[in-house]
Image (cartoon, helix red, strand yellow):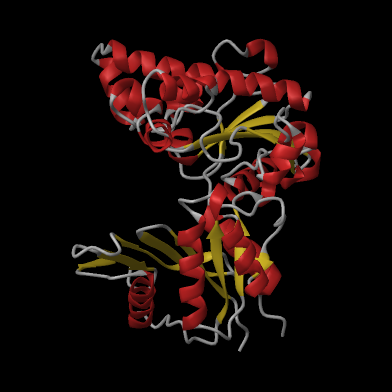
Length: 402
């Protein structure tokens, strides 16, 4: 029997998201989430294509080992057990691969050690990713396990974009450089944008705007990333739901010296209490737009700051790329907020950017153009699919070779 299925795992600190995909037709056989791991109120949510609807159960799930066993039980209940000979590989999302990992990689002891060595630059993500990998390896030690790195797509950036202007020896000693994140999304969306235009990825220059609670921009020339907004960590760049994005580094010294804040307190401030939630108390763009419609000035200011930063990156990446063929909006806000898309390109007509109001207002599920007919630069909405990208890369590397 030919093995053509891939299980995709995204292990967080207190959750595991999973999808089982059939690679012959790119269909989803099952999706699920185990959340609140380590609590008495843990929850398992599972949906299978065969059943047609989802099911949910709650109860204590002590750790990731128990979480993946719960996932395995749910899959087995639908006849999709992990012991199936149709399962070709397991693909793992790993947030930080540093400079070392430039492509999807079959996991072995050396790979595990290197991911562990990167924990200091990804303390919130890599430990959870490692836990999920190790648990999955105990469940199916015979199966290829593949790490797909958020940072890998951005390793094609030239040194002029990746290097920070600090002492080289210090930067190298502590691995300080721009790595970028959301790489699987930027890779998928840039490629799908080219497909939407009826062109090959190597013939298209695209600015990808991944706008969710976390947000990042990338400049993609001929299918290769040449610049991105996130840096050493996901804190740099655009205004996000709870993250500040770009800021004068001296603010940190000021808060330490004058505000008496510790490094941990500042870390929490910039990562969890800044961005939209810091500016207006909400990080849900729908709620912010509702408040704006009711005349809330604080919400309007937060929206304006968000858009101002976004415009700056669009303009900067137009300069980096020179020739821009398309700007693609993706992720939760990018795919669903017509107001954000319209405001982001308003006034950029000299750069060839504009949206058609009617096209922009239409909600749709697939990739679509929202720019006027004959526009010099295509503006598109392209739904991201990071799980499919991980599955595709995993299967290409470790799929059945019969």
